[in-house]
Image (cartoon, rainbow, N blue to C red):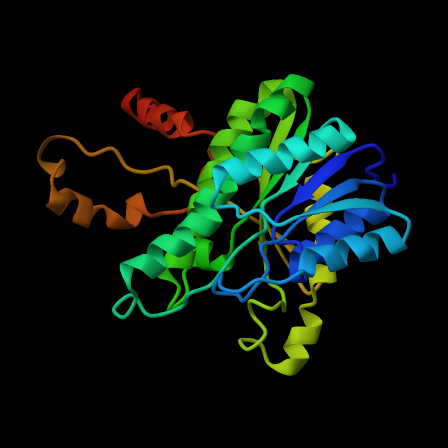
Length: 299
């Protein structure tokens, strides 16, 4: 079945280039009306550009509908205004792709606290701002599709990116709670962890890899994850046409009692504690507590 977005209204942040632009153009091509949000500027968050306007022109030239927005995701009031503008023009907001981001890479030893805070503000707090701005609208209309952008750095770590990694894993955690809270109102929330050659990564990739990891090869996963029949509470890796699912798992664990309930007991049973045989994939934090209770009951 063809996935289409006719009559859907989508907001894509950081859509002036790279992944966001690819998402916006593909959504519009499949019928969505798109708010192209982009503050513009360099990957460290400085400067300004008219990139969003160019993407809108591109969409309109192809027969689609779009509007630009230059608001900063770090400013909640600007995000509320962006949502209100979309509703004033098109009556609703169905889809939000939180894509805007910056990099300020340094080893943690050399990283200034301001650089840590700024990256977390843009990625994590910025996504929360945008999501909060659309949340009540989606609850009221009993329909919403939200996509957070994590990273392999957040999931698995990467030298020189403590700020970025902290923000990105935070977004995966935000997704998991919002997927639970949004379920009763048909709001599905997912996370994408893309690997792509964009203005944020252009000097990090060799030239041939930059081409192989083009944003258009990530977009299919993003569009599926904001479609009507999307799953929810998933973390999906995407890059160069390869798509993967990532999970936060929990081992069966080991119950320690008596003298073994000690640091030495943890050390002695470490192999059993970390044994991944039959590991669980909890769908909520409560499931970890339930697994502990089952151990206490001897199940």
